Image (tube, rainbow, N blue to C red; front, top):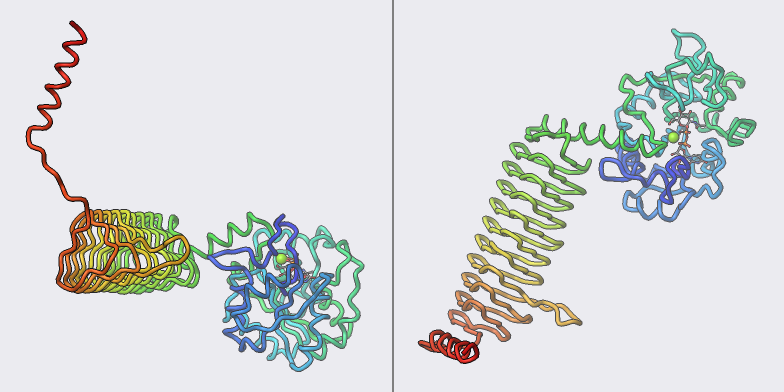
Length: 462
Ligand code: UD1
Ligand code: MG
């Protein structure tokens, strides 16, 4: 269920697209669901900003069902009755509780099947249950459920119950849809509550049971921005703990932001205040020094990222050294053992094995071979105001400092470009190109100049 607006977030963005752990709430729930059943058996009920939700999650391969008017969680199931009729049982998940695990979903289903229940709900004991529906059991010892009491309608005695309805259920499909018409909107929100199915099925003498998870964190939903922040922190700490258990060193993990889908191999060290985002993959024995932000990038083994680097959709070969203060933009492919240094910006380039661009350089739309040295302040002039052009620098080239390479241009194998050159045509293999104004040296000129100035000032003052 993902059709709700999320009024309490005070946002134009639908609740289920708000992010925790670096991706939408709903993406976490779908990821858990698709580890229990194939994506083709998942039906996502969308409504508020439906197209936005659909396109954000389209790549997951799940189905979408439109609930154009959001008249409650019970109503959400009513609109999905047609596609669900093909199944014997349905697991219902709330799209706003992102820490649910595939194990818990599977346990809920197994318990439901074992009990031959019409409805099985997932519960948890919370110290602060306010806001959640409360589970009214038949008696303390049995799994049989009498009803679920929503916060707004609960009696003072019911509000004292710490066992909450997590918003995850398993239903027998025929029993659900033979009784769902009995739901009413006679409640404070004037909505069809799916939770009322407990009492409805009970009255129809159908078995309704509860399965309690010991891991209460798993079922926490997010209805407010403050709750989103709590979930985000919990998920990021859980991610750090998981990585540490897998052999990654993370100093001061509370300062690191590592997204859920990030992969890092063992013996890599993450220093404080680092962000590793999206689908980034980092190999083993790397060191990511402080204040770097790395998004959707691929980093091989033994790479050193010095402080203050920004990497976006970049790929870094083994034993390369990046930074400090390098900005690697999308399409930067840095070869094995290559160095990209201080204040260097790259975009859509290949930098070959062992090549170096260590200082104050812009390299865009360039193919650079192996063993190349790019001097300080080199600029590839890749844009003529209309289109982008490529610079090719072959193996073993030496580009002197402060050179500009006006693309399209090629510097052949082993060539030298003299410092401060403006290269506008190709440099052949094994050639030296000097493209700068020739230096003129005038011996004695400064002292003549000073003497002339002195003579004028003396004549003026006399
Ligand atoms: C619901 C439960 C409550 C439970 C809590 C757990 C009901 C009536 N109450 O309350 O017992 O403790 O979850 O988090 O179900 N949705 C739709 N269509 C709608 C309305 C909601 O798809 O018409 C979706 C929402 O997008 C959301 C989910 O259903 O993902 C739950 O709705 P929400 O409004 O968050 O219900 P809660 O008030 O949290
Ligand atoms: Mg909720």
